[in-house]
Image (cartoon, rainbow, N blue to C red):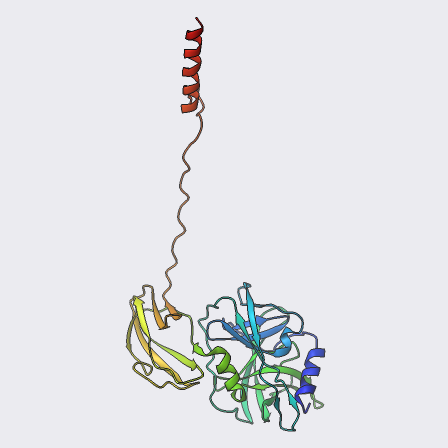
Length: 329
């Protein structure tokens, strides 16, 4: 596997299989099922990053963990680029824009650095039973765009074809997505993926917004970390409403937050509902209050009641009939 073309061909031929095999079950609301048998990760509040070939089967929805499907309005692909061997092709990565935002408490911040070789990474993916699993792999090789990984010991946990688009983290930072799985001759399962660092311009161009958790629940003080996925430097413009106050943080007052930088807001709440607005169109809902379902109201009675009572129309008819009979006498 030495070219992008070879990688894409092998991926398109592969059928969806299990995701992380032998890993540990986990729960994250920012890692979702994408297309047919793939995995994706939420960026911002309405974008998914996954593998390009995940749409080959005609996938037109992403499915969050509670089973609700959200439609996709657009898909974006990076421009063709040469790899380490001079072969020009399109990286097996895509960004999907959703019709409506996804609610997420969890978030993976994108790394500003290249992955470290001979160091462990964590891979995530959905299995055939649609359960999110994770496992620890060793990153063994890094080229211009592609990273190679191998399971630590036989049967400890590995990825397979069908686990495509799943996030790969190193030191708790989002460094790449899984795109392929192969079996090595020595019996250790290997996989490969694409780094996100070389695709930074592609990501920033199409997202160009804040990357942040969209909900939080707490009483007292909390630190919320956000990341700039803007193309250019941005300035802090946050404000609040409801039971939320900004008490500090590294974002506050900053006028040159650079692309991929993270910063913090220190906020305070008494446990009631409010919002932290990063912009008028981007906000974090704090302590959402579930409003009780209103009791059904009794409907007004219409027509006549039992027991011989008449409505207005019935009484009017009797009066007309009575006058008619008198006039005939």
